[in-house]
Image (cartoon, rainbow, N blue to C red; front, side, top):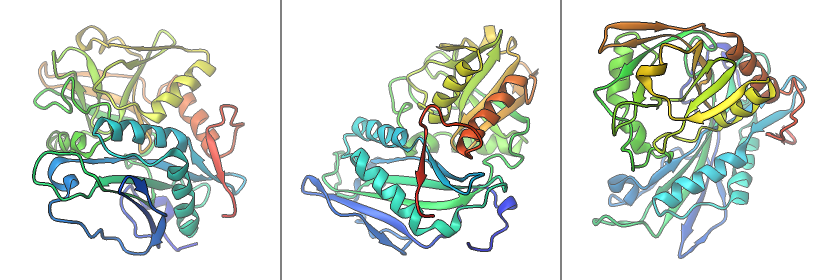
Length: 339
Protein backbone atom coordinates (compact mmCIF):
# COMPACT_ATOMS: atom_id res chain seq x y z
CA UNK A 1 0.00 0.00 0.00
CA UNK A 2 1.26 3.48 -0.82
CA UNK A 3 2.07 5.85 2.03
CA UNK A 4 -0.60 8.57 1.98
CA UNK A 5 -2.32 10.63 4.68
CA UNK A 6 -5.58 8.76 4.10
CA UNK A 7 -7.64 10.67 6.65
CA UNK A 8 -6.76 14.05 5.16
CA UNK A 9 -6.58 13.24 1.49
CA UNK A 10 -9.45 15.49 0.36
CA UNK A 11 -11.38 15.16 -2.89
CA UNK A 12 -8.93 15.68 -5.74
CA UNK A 13 -6.71 13.93 -8.25
CA UNK A 14 -3.89 11.73 -6.95
CA UNK A 15 -1.66 10.05 -9.52
CA UNK A 16 -1.93 6.26 -9.55
CA UNK A 17 0.00 3.69 -11.60
CA UNK A 18 -2.34 2.88 -14.47
CA UNK A 19 -5.43 3.88 -16.37
CA UNK A 20 -7.23 1.62 -18.84
CA UNK A 21 -8.40 2.45 -22.37
CA UNK A 22 -10.38 0.96 -25.22
CA UNK A 23 -11.00 2.43 -28.67
CA UNK A 24 -13.98 2.26 -31.00
CA UNK A 25 -13.20 2.27 -34.70
CA UNK A 26 -15.00 1.08 -37.84
CA UNK A 27 -18.06 0.11 -35.84
CA UNK A 28 -16.48 -2.05 -33.16
CA UNK A 29 -14.64 -1.89 -29.86
CA UNK A 30 -11.02 -3.00 -29.69
CA UNK A 31 -9.23 -4.74 -26.83
CA UNK A 32 -8.76 -2.86 -23.52
CA UNK A 33 -5.19 -2.00 -22.55
CA UNK A 34 -3.55 -0.62 -19.44
CA UNK A 35 -1.21 2.35 -19.71
CA UNK A 36 0.85 4.46 -17.32
CA UNK A 37 0.43 7.58 -19.50
CA UNK A 38 -1.79 10.31 -18.09
CA UNK A 39 -2.26 12.16 -21.37
CA UNK A 40 -4.39 11.50 -24.44
CA UNK A 41 -3.09 11.98 -27.99
CA UNK A 42 -5.98 13.67 -29.75
CA UNK A 43 -6.68 15.39 -33.03
CA UNK A 44 -7.12 19.15 -32.72
CA UNK A 45 -10.52 18.87 -34.45
CA UNK A 46 -11.88 16.04 -32.25
CA UNK A 47 -15.64 16.29 -31.69
CA UNK A 48 -15.21 16.09 -27.91
CA UNK A 49 -13.13 19.27 -27.93
CA UNK A 50 -15.36 21.34 -30.20
CA UNK A 51 -18.89 20.00 -29.81
CA UNK A 52 -18.95 18.48 -26.36
CA UNK A 53 -19.26 14.82 -27.35
CA UNK A 54 -18.14 13.69 -23.93
CA UNK A 55 -19.84 11.75 -21.15
CA UNK A 56 -18.44 10.48 -17.88
CA UNK A 57 -19.30 8.54 -14.75
CA UNK A 58 -18.27 8.32 -11.11
CA UNK A 59 -18.21 5.27 -8.84
CA UNK A 60 -16.41 4.21 -5.67
CA UNK A 61 -14.61 1.19 -4.27
CA UNK A 62 -14.62 0.69 -0.49
CA UNK A 63 -12.29 -1.42 1.68
CA UNK A 64 -14.70 -3.24 3.96
CA UNK A 65 -14.56 -4.08 7.63
CA UNK A 66 -13.75 -7.65 6.52
CA UNK A 67 -10.89 -6.50 4.30
CA UNK A 68 -12.79 -7.08 1.04
CA UNK A 69 -12.90 -4.48 -1.73
CA UNK A 70 -16.46 -3.60 -2.75
CA UNK A 71 -17.44 -1.73 -5.92
CA UNK A 72 -20.84 -0.07 -5.48
CA UNK A 73 -23.64 -0.47 -8.06
CA UNK A 74 -21.30 -0.35 -11.05
CA UNK A 75 -23.95 -1.85 -13.34
CA UNK A 76 -26.00 1.30 -12.81
CA UNK A 77 -23.04 3.44 -13.89
CA UNK A 78 -22.68 1.37 -17.07
CA UNK A 79 -26.38 1.79 -17.86
CA UNK A 80 -26.34 5.51 -17.13
CA UNK A 81 -23.32 6.04 -19.39
CA UNK A 82 -25.13 4.15 -22.15
CA UNK A 83 -28.18 6.42 -21.75
CA UNK A 84 -26.02 9.56 -21.72
CA UNK A 85 -24.05 8.42 -24.76
CA UNK A 86 -27.16 7.54 -26.73
CA UNK A 87 -28.57 11.02 -26.11
CA UNK A 88 -25.43 12.49 -27.71
CA UNK A 89 -25.46 9.84 -30.51
CA UNK A 90 -22.22 8.32 -29.23
CA UNK A 91 -21.15 4.66 -29.30
CA UNK A 92 -21.43 3.39 -25.73
CA UNK A 93 -19.28 0.58 -24.31
CA UNK A 94 -21.31 -2.58 -23.60
CA UNK A 95 -22.05 -3.22 -19.93
CA UNK A 96 -19.76 -6.26 -19.72
CA UNK A 97 -16.83 -4.32 -21.24
CA UNK A 98 -17.49 -1.39 -18.89
CA UNK A 99 -17.41 -3.65 -15.81
CA UNK A 100 -14.44 -5.69 -17.04
CA UNK A 101 -12.37 -2.54 -17.52
CA UNK A 102 -13.38 -1.18 -14.10
CA UNK A 103 -12.25 -4.36 -12.38
CA UNK A 104 -8.95 -4.49 -14.30
CA UNK A 105 -7.95 -0.93 -13.50
CA UNK A 106 -8.94 -1.32 -9.84
CA UNK A 107 -6.78 -4.43 -9.52
CA UNK A 108 -3.90 -2.68 -11.29
CA UNK A 109 -4.04 0.12 -8.69
CA UNK A 110 -4.99 -1.92 -5.62
CA UNK A 111 -2.30 -0.31 -3.48
CA UNK A 112 -4.19 2.99 -3.75
CA UNK A 113 -7.39 1.63 -2.19
CA UNK A 114 -7.64 3.43 1.18
CA UNK A 115 -7.71 1.28 4.32
CA UNK A 116 -10.93 0.65 6.22
CA UNK A 117 -11.67 3.22 8.91
CA UNK A 118 -10.04 6.21 7.19
CA UNK A 119 -13.22 7.60 5.64
CA UNK A 120 -11.55 7.54 2.21
CA UNK A 121 -12.35 5.42 -0.85
CA UNK A 122 -11.07 4.73 -4.35
CA UNK A 123 -12.90 6.89 -6.87
CA UNK A 124 -13.48 5.37 -10.32
CA UNK A 125 -13.85 7.80 -13.24
CA UNK A 126 -14.98 6.31 -16.60
CA UNK A 127 -14.78 8.75 -19.51
CA UNK A 128 -16.08 8.44 -23.10
CA UNK A 129 -14.95 10.95 -25.73
CA UNK A 130 -15.49 11.45 -29.45
CA UNK A 131 -12.13 11.48 -31.27
CA UNK A 132 -13.08 11.87 -34.95
CA UNK A 133 -11.81 15.08 -36.57
CA UNK A 134 -14.74 17.29 -37.65
CA UNK A 135 -15.30 20.98 -38.26
CA UNK A 136 -19.04 20.63 -38.73
CA UNK A 137 -21.46 19.74 -35.95
CA UNK A 138 -21.59 15.98 -36.42
CA UNK A 139 -21.44 12.85 -34.33
CA UNK A 140 -18.05 11.15 -34.21
CA UNK A 141 -17.27 7.82 -35.86
CA UNK A 142 -14.40 7.05 -33.46
CA UNK A 143 -14.35 7.02 -29.66
CA UNK A 144 -12.03 6.43 -26.77
CA UNK A 145 -13.34 4.93 -23.54
CA UNK A 146 -10.97 5.23 -20.61
CA UNK A 147 -11.08 4.76 -16.85
CA UNK A 148 -8.77 6.14 -14.22
CA UNK A 149 -8.93 5.74 -10.44
CA UNK A 150 -7.79 7.99 -7.63
CA UNK A 151 -8.10 7.82 -3.83
CA UNK A 152 -10.43 10.47 -2.39
CA UNK A 153 -11.80 11.74 0.87
CA UNK A 154 -15.17 13.48 1.40
CA UNK A 155 -16.38 15.80 -1.39
CA UNK A 156 -17.34 18.40 1.20
CA UNK A 157 -14.35 18.80 3.52
CA UNK A 158 -16.29 18.28 6.75
CA UNK A 159 -17.87 15.02 5.57
CA UNK A 160 -21.24 14.16 7.11
CA UNK A 161 -21.76 17.55 8.70
CA UNK A 162 -24.18 20.44 8.10
CA UNK A 163 -23.50 22.67 5.11
CA UNK A 164 -24.80 26.08 4.09
CA UNK A 165 -26.20 26.41 0.56
CA UNK A 166 -27.60 29.28 -1.49
CA UNK A 167 -30.48 29.54 -3.92
CA UNK A 168 -29.15 30.27 -7.42
CA UNK A 169 -31.37 32.45 -9.58
CA UNK A 170 -28.91 34.18 -11.94
CA UNK A 171 -27.83 31.04 -13.79
CA UNK A 172 -29.43 27.83 -15.07
CA UNK A 173 -27.68 24.48 -14.88
CA UNK A 174 -29.52 22.90 -17.83
CA UNK A 175 -32.21 23.79 -20.37
CA UNK A 176 -35.67 22.23 -19.87
CA UNK A 177 -35.28 20.01 -22.94
CA UNK A 178 -31.48 19.90 -22.91
CA UNK A 179 -28.87 17.53 -21.49
CA UNK A 180 -29.73 17.85 -17.79
CA UNK A 181 -30.57 14.15 -17.41
CA UNK A 182 -27.27 13.07 -19.04
CA UNK A 183 -23.89 13.07 -17.31
CA UNK A 184 -22.10 15.35 -19.75
CA UNK A 185 -19.36 17.85 -19.00
CA UNK A 186 -21.39 20.73 -20.40
CA UNK A 187 -23.84 20.57 -17.51
CA UNK A 188 -20.98 21.10 -15.07
CA UNK A 189 -19.45 23.86 -17.18
CA UNK A 190 -22.78 25.68 -16.88
CA UNK A 191 -22.48 25.61 -13.08
CA UNK A 192 -18.86 26.75 -12.71
CA UNK A 193 -19.55 30.49 -12.45
CA UNK A 194 -22.45 30.09 -10.04
CA UNK A 195 -20.51 27.56 -7.97
CA UNK A 196 -17.45 29.78 -7.72
CA UNK A 197 -19.58 32.75 -6.65
CA UNK A 198 -21.31 30.62 -4.01
CA UNK A 199 -17.98 29.39 -2.61
CA UNK A 200 -16.62 32.95 -2.49
CA UNK A 201 -19.54 33.86 -0.24
CA UNK A 202 -18.95 30.90 2.07
CA UNK A 203 -21.55 28.47 0.72
CA UNK A 204 -20.76 24.83 0.02
CA UNK A 205 -23.14 24.53 -2.92
CA UNK A 206 -25.89 26.24 -4.89
CA UNK A 207 -29.47 25.09 -5.45
CA UNK A 208 -31.03 25.41 -8.91
CA UNK A 209 -34.68 25.83 -9.79
CA UNK A 210 -36.15 24.72 -13.11
CA UNK A 211 -35.00 26.87 -16.02
CA UNK A 212 -38.44 27.21 -17.63
CA UNK A 213 -40.40 28.79 -14.77
CA UNK A 214 -37.96 29.20 -11.86
CA UNK A 215 -40.69 27.56 -9.82
CA UNK A 216 -39.68 23.98 -9.06
CA UNK A 217 -36.57 22.61 -7.35
CA UNK A 218 -34.18 20.80 -9.70
CA UNK A 219 -30.89 19.93 -7.99
CA UNK A 220 -27.70 21.24 -6.41
CA UNK A 221 -24.69 22.10 -8.53
CA UNK A 222 -22.87 18.91 -7.58
CA UNK A 223 -25.56 16.64 -6.16
CA UNK A 224 -29.23 15.67 -6.14
CA UNK A 225 -31.72 17.28 -3.76
CA UNK A 226 -33.82 15.39 -1.23
CA UNK A 227 -35.97 16.47 1.68
CA UNK A 228 -37.79 14.85 4.59
CA UNK A 229 -41.13 15.83 6.06
CA UNK A 230 -44.00 13.87 7.59
CA UNK A 231 -41.88 10.70 7.52
CA UNK A 232 -41.62 11.00 3.72
CA UNK A 233 -38.51 11.04 1.52
CA UNK A 234 -39.11 13.57 -1.26
CA UNK A 235 -36.94 14.15 -4.32
CA UNK A 236 -37.61 16.22 -7.48
CA UNK A 237 -39.17 14.74 -10.58
CA UNK A 238 -37.60 16.69 -13.45
CA UNK A 239 -36.21 15.88 -16.88
CA UNK A 240 -33.34 18.28 -16.16
CA UNK A 241 -32.08 16.33 -13.13
CA UNK A 242 -29.33 13.74 -13.41
CA UNK A 243 -30.50 10.34 -12.21
CA UNK A 244 -28.24 9.94 -9.18
CA UNK A 245 -27.37 6.35 -8.30
CA UNK A 246 -26.99 7.41 -4.66
CA UNK A 247 -30.44 9.02 -4.72
CA UNK A 248 -31.86 5.87 -6.30
CA UNK A 249 -30.29 3.83 -3.48
CA UNK A 250 -31.53 6.19 -0.77
CA UNK A 251 -35.09 5.86 -2.02
CA UNK A 252 -34.84 2.11 -1.43
CA UNK A 253 -33.19 2.58 1.97
CA UNK A 254 -35.84 5.13 2.98
CA UNK A 255 -38.52 2.59 2.12
CA UNK A 256 -36.63 -0.05 4.15
CA UNK A 257 -36.71 2.35 7.11
CA UNK A 258 -40.47 2.74 6.83
CA UNK A 259 -40.59 6.14 5.13
CA UNK A 260 -42.92 6.94 2.28
CA UNK A 261 -41.07 7.83 -0.91
CA UNK A 262 -42.20 10.55 -3.31
CA UNK A 263 -40.50 11.37 -6.62
CA UNK A 264 -42.46 14.45 -7.71
CA UNK A 265 -42.27 18.13 -8.67
CA UNK A 266 -41.37 20.25 -5.62
CA UNK A 267 -42.66 23.83 -5.73
CA UNK A 268 -39.98 25.97 -4.12
CA UNK A 269 -42.06 28.81 -2.67
CA UNK A 270 -44.69 26.53 -1.18
CA UNK A 271 -42.44 23.86 0.28
CA UNK A 272 -38.91 25.10 0.98
CA UNK A 273 -39.86 26.30 4.45
CA UNK A 274 -41.86 23.20 5.37
CA UNK A 275 -39.12 20.53 5.36
CA UNK A 276 -37.69 18.99 8.52
CA UNK A 277 -34.51 17.83 6.78
CA UNK A 278 -32.80 18.71 3.49
CA UNK A 279 -29.80 16.98 1.97
CA UNK A 280 -27.48 16.86 -1.02
CA UNK A 281 -26.69 13.36 -2.23
CA UNK A 282 -24.43 11.78 -4.84
CA UNK A 283 -21.48 9.42 -5.35
CA UNK A 284 -18.98 12.08 -4.33
CA UNK A 285 -21.05 13.72 -1.59
CA UNK A 286 -22.81 10.53 -0.29
CA UNK A 287 -25.13 12.61 1.92
CA UNK A 288 -24.38 16.17 2.97
CA UNK A 289 -27.07 17.43 5.36
CA UNK A 290 -28.13 21.02 4.68
CA UNK A 291 -28.20 23.10 7.85
CA UNK A 292 -29.18 26.38 6.23
CA UNK A 293 -30.33 27.63 2.84
CA UNK A 294 -30.06 31.31 1.98
CA UNK A 295 -32.52 32.92 -0.44
CA UNK A 296 -30.84 36.11 -1.75
CA UNK A 297 -34.06 37.37 -3.34
CA UNK A 298 -35.73 37.62 0.06
CA UNK A 299 -32.57 38.03 2.15
CA UNK A 300 -33.92 35.11 4.15
CA UNK A 301 -32.43 32.00 5.74
CA UNK A 302 -34.22 28.64 6.00
CA UNK A 303 -32.92 26.32 8.70
CA UNK A 304 -33.23 22.55 8.92
CA UNK A 305 -32.46 19.76 11.37
CA UNK A 306 -28.93 18.77 10.34
CA UNK A 307 -27.88 16.11 10.48
CA UNK A 308 -31.45 15.02 11.00
CA UNK A 309 -32.72 11.72 12.32
CA UNK A 310 -33.63 10.18 8.98
CA UNK A 311 -30.63 11.55 7.08
CA UNK A 312 -28.38 10.05 9.73
CA UNK A 313 -30.12 6.68 9.56
CA UNK A 314 -29.94 6.60 5.74
CA UNK A 315 -26.30 7.69 5.69
CA UNK A 316 -25.24 4.95 8.07
CA UNK A 317 -27.40 2.32 6.36
CA UNK A 318 -25.81 3.13 2.98
CA UNK A 319 -22.26 3.23 4.36
CA UNK A 320 -22.82 -0.02 6.26
CA UNK A 321 -23.63 -1.74 2.97
CA UNK A 322 -20.70 -0.14 1.16
CA UNK A 323 -18.23 -1.10 3.90
CA UNK A 324 -19.62 -4.60 4.46
CA UNK A 325 -20.90 -3.89 7.94
CA UNK A 326 -24.46 -4.89 7.00
CA UNK A 327 -26.02 -7.50 4.74
CA UNK A 328 -26.23 -6.37 1.12
CA UNK A 329 -29.76 -7.64 0.68
CA UNK A 330 -30.30 -5.62 -2.51
CA UNK A 331 -27.22 -7.01 -4.27
CA UNK A 332 -25.62 -3.59 -4.77
CA UNK A 333 -21.97 -4.40 -4.17
CA UNK A 334 -19.50 -6.32 -6.32
CA UNK A 335 -16.51 -7.80 -4.47
CA UNK A 336 -13.25 -7.35 -6.39
CA UNK A 337 -11.47 -10.62 -5.70
CA UNK A 338 -7.76 -10.88 -5.09
CA UNK A 339 -6.98 -7.44 -3.70
